[in-house]
Image 1 (cartoon, helix red, strand yellow):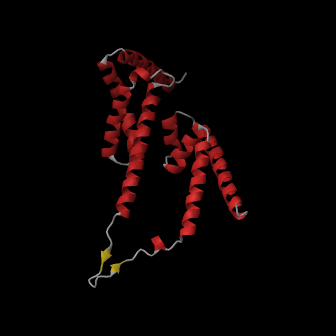
Image 2 (cartoon, helix red, strand yellow):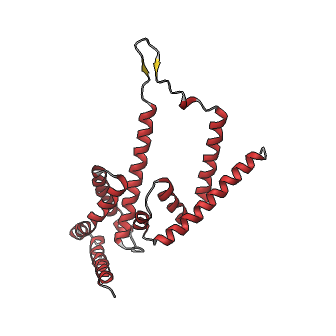
Image 3 (tube, one colour):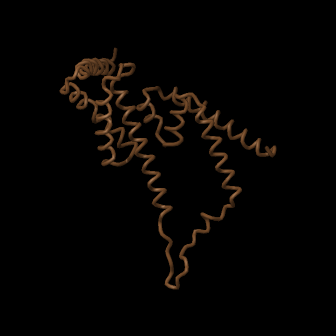
Amino acid sequence: MSQEVSQEEDRQEEDRRLLARAQDGDVSAFEALVGLHQDRVYGLALRMTRSEADAAEITQDTFLSAYQHLKDFRGEAAFGSWVHRIAANHALMRLRHRRVAQAAESELQAPEFTERGTLADYPVTDWSRDAEEKALDAELGQAIQQAADRLPEGYREVFLLKDVDGLSYEQIAEVTGDSIPAIKSRLHRARLALREAIDLFYNRDNRGV
């Protein structure tokens, strides 16, 4: 047994001891767990959000959520993996909120006018596509969303983390606790299923259905 494996087993055993005490109401034991894992949680949040302020808030929210659900944790996974999943969920919610806020801010920007009272930089590109093309895109997006919803949970999770939220394979492995080859395999199958949904959509459209 390598020294690294032995150290990891020792860490997990220490986590189990502290967890048992924390679940019995020992606040100092939970504080010790926070001390053992906060750096890795912060590092994960920082890599996902690229913001020190967001990472700090996510770290606080992660351990608050963990404390609130401490008695629900049954130990199916290591404590470290559990809190990493919580941190990843908080980070993903933060990223999605950020994208929505940025999109809303962009849409609400007031038009600019020249000194003569005419619109400056009229957004021709944004309005050049006709209603039929926009409707087609909406239908395709709905078809892809429905196909994604039908994916098994593990496949859907990997697809969302990689292709929607842009995480690296290493980050996804850290979040899920799975190996990179297993993640790549599930992502490949998920992409095949979604590609099939896209092909079916266009074949339907070509048949005039």
